[in-house]
Amino acid sequence: MASHRKPRQRPLSGGTARTTAATLALAGAATATAFEGTSQADPRPTPSQVKTEVDRLYEEAEAATEQYNGAKEKADEAERALTGLREETARKTDQLNTARSALGTLAASQYRSGSLGTAVQLALAADPQEYLSQASFITRAGDRNAAGITTVRRRLDEVGRLREQAAGQLADLRAKQDELSAHKAVIEDKLAAAKRLLAKLTAEERAAYEAQTPAASPAASSAATKSSTPPPPPADGSRAARAVAFAYGAIGKPYVWGATGPGSFDCSGLTQAAWRSAGVSLPRTTYTQINAGRRVSRDQLAPGDLVFFYSGVTHVGLYIGNGQMIHAPRPGSTVRLAPVDSMPWAGASRPA
Image (cartoon, rainbow, N blue to C red; front, side, top):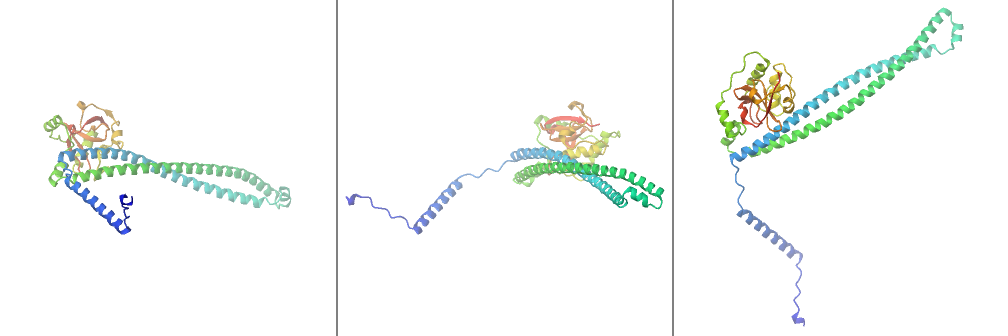
């Protein structure tokens, strides 16, 4: 029966086991390499595909930029309020210290003059009339002492209240600074992704992309071609004319997200600066600028009007007439002329 038994297999020794494992690992790696070698590499994206994706990333980055601008405006307001509270707290603290000092001096004087009873002081006084005059002063001083105590208490309450307000304002400021950092991270991620995509283009393809405006429909492109001649800036001296003249002067300056001039601009920073040069204060973001002034329809546009684009109202330009605007398009570009039909229309408003 023993002759029919299956021979017992000897276990692998430590060295043999390690050798076998290494062999299997190498075989697996070779197999994986073989499969990878037979698969085709990802095809190089076409310039059109890169443009579509980069346009999308830039649009999302611009939306995050406007959110950043709004958060920065609020953070700046919170910082100014905090500075004002701190300055007021310092003034009230000085007033408190002055009141405390006056109260302490008065209390010490009363203590020194009131060490003897009033009857004894009157009896020992060389000049009773002089003593009575001093007693009258001490009575008045007591009234002043009570008033001084009241003043100190009021100053203490004021300082305490201001310090509480400042602490709350500081917490609010830190929250807004955190919001700023979050929007900044989103913007930088989108721009970095766009930069990586653009790096896949040739120098000629990239230059062609940088020179063009955002994608437009064939009908819009045809309309833009017919109205491609920019009109001269208005010369009537109006506020709108001054805003347009400023925008013409900004042509060629670089787009920088979050910038409001004078050397660089983002889209809403340009329109804000243009109208500020005309004496009109606009809010900082696209989604607040669209509600500044009177809304106008597309067929009623006049030079100086603000024109807005995309469903989220994330881009703005300054209309100059003849179907044209001046705007700061995107990172890597400069302030330039463009047809208003080159982007999805969202609305228009007239600040003045």
